[in-house]
Length: 149
Length: 405
Image 1 (cartoon, rainbow over the protein chains, first blue to last red):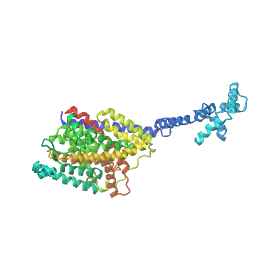
Image 2 (image 1 turned 135 degrees about the vertical axis):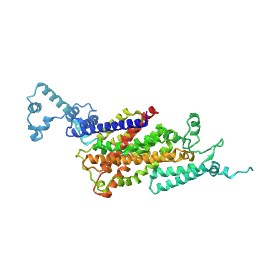
Image 3 (image 1 turned 30 degrees about the vertical axis):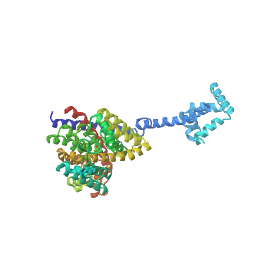
Image 4 (image 1 turned 180 degrees about the vertical axis):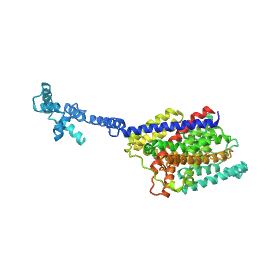
């Protein structure tokens, strides 16, 4: 096989490989740009998801060690949110339509007319808070917000 | 008391006169060249980190020739030609640089360490801006790497030697070392020395090449700004490095040590592992470059330079760099024509992967004509792509040539 043919083959494969690499880079770039505003998908979403996982692990390590149910509940609410609660106490957002059933449930939970299950849950929570004087929870929350001394 | 001859007492001088006239001239010439390289390094005309150990090593190794047991001439530095394991084990206990040579140089470790350092210094974000353009220019700037193979073959070299000297066109020292160690075991020392000596050509010669091939009114063109894109985060650059590394290793496992080393450097930087970044770009990179220079100098013995293949290597090396520079500018001109004369063809020469020298040379050449024109981002993109395309061609040569030979 002649050297000229060899070098022709090498040049062709080099260009093809180079363009293939450029294509991969372009795909990565495209996924960055096209999903820039979509926080739940694409590379950005993935990296946020990963950073979210790491912060979840850190917060869990801080809060979930005591076996304190109230702390766990707080933790749950922290991560999954109480959209209804935040909306009630944050002015106009609280009256956002579409939340009526949740609002009602929450209202019943705090102010009565609750279902028997909700009443039981409420009294259990109150009992726990009473028995501990809520110190554990306060300590957990203090540590969470202000860091351990 | 037995009479001691002058030449026996001062063996460096004695061996000068017992080795023949040619050897005498070659040794004195190399001592002078070594000292001249030290001078050029001190004056910062050539890279001092490389030239000072290399020059001093070259001068010293040609001075410190002694008579070994058996009457053979040699030194106590290194024996690069040993292949027998038992002999090697004995020499490891005698020649002081033999451990460094055997365990870092001849297995390519030192090239990989330098590549890790290059990886840490690279910002792949420039390449991510315009990947097709960058790779396109870098491919054209490999013209010397492609064309020197048939030229060297026509001059009587075998394919392995031809490809090794052609790699000088990539202007990437570690890559030349890696390729020639695999494909040209007899000539890898002179080829690597030629490569490192000629890398200064990119600083000294390319500005003249640009002036010769690109008219002034074209040289000052400010290329259009690319569409605004969001800033590229370190996570995205890390993702890029990981994907490209794995893909290239899948394609060319033979060159995987180089790919891995380069992208490991990028990954460590983008993952912000600061202690490791500091270690790689400081002690590892500088230490490896220093020992590479030292070993290259030490390997410049007179009998090696007297090899008749050296002169063609010197010619082909400079021709490879010249052709690559011309190829880069040609690529730049193609983009210039297709962009409606809006692109600055000088950017093309930055595709020669001497990071970041050629990018800086391109920017300087443009700034001389139009101080407001900024081409450095595009030039750096082509420059970094040049490293990747040179690695691709290394992978191809190392994989294909043993099949063809």
